[in-house]
Amino acid sequence: MRVFDNDFFYILCEPFGEYQTNCYLVFNKTKKEALIVDPGIGASTWIIDTLKNTNAIPLAILNTHGHFDHVWSNAELLEHFAGIPLLCPYEDAFMLEKDCFSTGLPSSIPTLLVGAKANDTICEKTSTINNLGRKNHFFYGDFAIAFICYPGHTPGCSVIILRHKDAKNIESQENLESLSKGHQVMFSGDFIFNRSIGRSDFPYSSHQAMKASLEKFLTLQENMLVLPGHGSVTSVVQEQNNIPFWIPRL
Image (tube, rainbow, N blue to C red; front, side, top):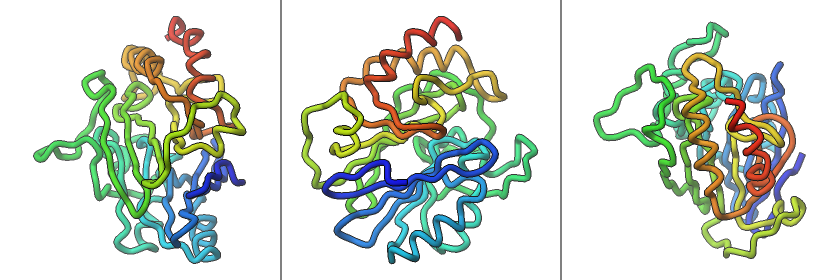
């Protein structure tokens, strides 16, 4: 299903696995280039076939966080697309390397630990507010990518904001149809959903960190379409209106 389509790129979405985790493919309209976001359980065939049918070369795999239902197909895709970089928040990388939830997750090692310092190594983490609001920027092909860390659901839980390098800012709209053609889009993983938020009662999660992250999200100024890890599209403004309901319940 096509969920975003502006003058420069478009995005396809398909849900996979028992938890119907959304996997996204981003396609450049002027070059045969693509990005893969959160390839979950059983997503590989769809990804490989769709890229083959469009003659698109994948530039990178992007993980919003480390939970198995979002990263399951990392290993198979890394083997199929030799040399493709895998980007994952540093604090969640241990979840990719070790099957810490005993699900049978195939191990994968990120090429780039988003937010890591020079001497940082992969190790088990628990959610804190130390990385709250951290922003890291990357460029792949014509795509400008920003990871913003909102810990709580997982230690490195992040949203990914994507735009084309040539796109110009346009006046923010609250209508989802307008936003689906805007200049940028947010992949929210399991941080923000349509009228809901990610759970913070899992191992390595934190209610306190999630609360702080939600409060930080309320200060985000720019509206844009939000593509969540589960369920339907929403927007920054729409969920900013819903967040005050959730904060007292953490």
